[in-house]
Length: 26
Image (cartoon, rainbow, N blue to C red):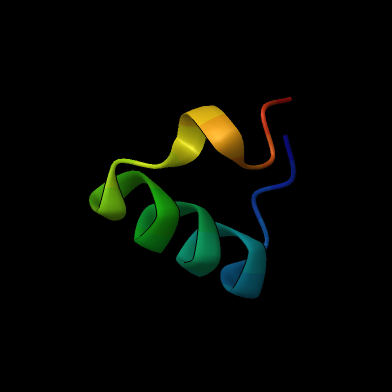
């Protein structure tokens, strides 16, 4: 899992949306 600003922001957004199950699941 990359902890880049942009990647982290998108990851946080996806997690907040609660759709990380059907997204980048690394």
